[in-house]
Amino acid sequence: MTVQPSRDDRTIPPALPVFDRVAILGLGLIGGSVARAARKHVLANAIVGYDRDAGVGERVRQIGFVDRVADTARDAVSGADCVVLAIPVGACAPAIVEIADSLMPGAVLTDVGSVKGCVVRDVGPHVPPGVHFIPGHPIAGTEFSGPDAGFAELFDGRYCVLTPPGAADPAALARLTAFWEGVGSTVEVMSADHHDRVLAITSHLPHLIAYTIVGTAAELEEDIKQEVIRFSASGFRDFTRIAASDPVMWRDVFLNNKEATLEIIQRFTEDLTALQKAIRRGDGARLQDWFIKTRSIRRSIIEAKQA
Amino acid sequence: MTVQPSRDDRTIPPALPVFDRVAILGLGLIGGSVARAARKHVLANAIVGYDRDAGVGERVRQIGFVDRVADTARDAVSGADCVVLAIPVGACAPAIVEIADSLMPGAVLTDVGSVKGCVVRDVGPHVPPGVHFIPGHPIAGTEFSGPDAGFAELFDGRYCVLTPPGAADPAALARLTAFWEGVGSTVEVMSADHHDRVLAITSHLPHLIAYTIVGTAAELEEDIKQEVIRFSASGFRDFTRIAASDPVMWRDVFLNNKEATLEIIQRFTEDLTALQKAIRRGDGARLQDWFIKTRSIRRSIIEAKQA
Image: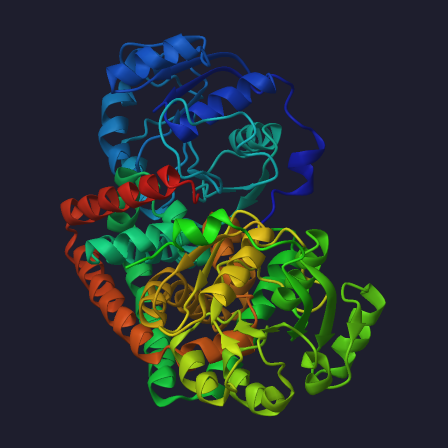
């Protein structure tokens, strides 16, 4: 299901800098990291940023990781040959409506959202003719948020998935691919639907589970809760890191990848129920078989150099 | 519920080395790390090891982290003033039956199991009079197993829980405390029942959840499974690390902490069902409120310096 850009696209890499002016809407962890990485690798002549939170814009002016913080989204994208929506997926539709008239013909429009089907559905219809819309998802992040959280190396050695529509312009796709490869990522091209099903299991379910278990702990009696924090190193701690991720971003992920997420929750629940039953019945053989099986998945990840 | 050893116990630390001869039964990750740490910090004049797997014993002779690998458990414990059971909790009852007659009067007998109630129940009745039985649980580990996996620093900066019976000898408790403090741990004393309830949420449930989700992924269609491995960095990877832990050890944990684990699975399932319903109904406010709540738990862990 995964399609690599053809060899021909890659043998003639676009000249550097890849873009003249990159506009980034949303200056949090991901937007701030895109800006820092693009500057570090000289992938644009100028980087303009905008955040609808004026306090964030002011902070970015202090940090200085963009050349200019614009006062409006329309101003930010004017004259940009690449526009990156680095905002929660639920905010993409209002954003495209706002900026559509200001987009430059020939510009590449992309995003960084964790769900792709909804972005195609909500943003696509508003993209003016002549603007090349190629949704994207860099598989990278941390549990921290905001303009101070980003760093230039966030995408280095990580995958970036692009989900171009069938009619996407090959030159635009090649430029966006060069941009992501320029920040150190490996680009994979696939359909939005396939992306959303894969990420439902690799990312959305793990985050939901982590949020659940940490919330379960938060509702324990106070004396036990203090002990849970004290002895968190025994496994719980890893979940709390995941469950500290940005609440608005994740709210939007679950609202917008509803079907794939609910389907994988259902499978997970069936498996948990089976293990619960094995514990209740004292069925050690079943537990041990299951635990041996999961070890082999870890080995595959180590072999794939993703550990 | 947690009781620190009294200040008086700590103002007169036992002289080093704490023990003359430490016998370690089970030479895997934990037993091998206890041996290496005890040697590094000169906590014993001699360290004798035994493993019922002859191949493991042979490997330990090659690595050389104990002074002697005994051929039988009885031989290993003879003359030892400290005996550490570093085996799955389900193996502790047969072990004590085997070694009981060979234990030296005055010896301290302890273990490192992740469940304490079952060890008190299964081992306690077989401990000869004059032997000081003090169950223990160092809150430390990795996803690796076997004699090559251990290292001397595993317990450094980590908690070690001791669950002495009410009639435990204070001098024996002080010596065992000094031993664990000697390898860098902070010792906490509590009841076995309290330990098992706390660990059910901090450790046993997280491991079960990780085993479940990784097993769910293992049963996906082959093409999706390959993608899951490739894109595991988006959250799934953290679970696979936990789900690579020793299968026999974890089988025994769930079989032996059944009630506390089943009770916390029940709470978790109720919470997951509520979030599932919120996703199905598109209730963004409920999701966001939950995700904000879990962030505060992470902050508490960071403040407690357990992150």
